[in-house]
Image (cartoon, rainbow, N blue to C red; front, top):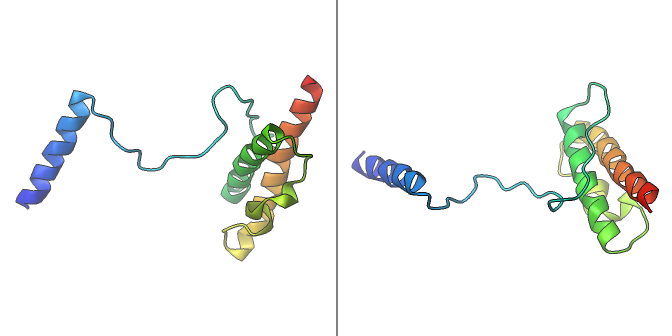
Length: 109
């Protein structure tokens, strides 16, 4: 119990002094300044939203690398780390986010 109290006091002290603390979960996304579309209207599952975000990130990587659009080149699209009943929604979201970024980039140029 003493160890827990000491640990908590150190955490609180570090937070009050401005010492940077590691993030509990660092979400990987496009770098600042990249266009990120909002999801289209509709009632989408969490798997769909996760796929949508991952598709956006994948499209930005492909655009930066000068690759033609193809969401199927990504392992996350081909083999989503999801239960079987969520894979379809994830892929549909991934495809939609990926395509929205490429459409936006194409219209800019």
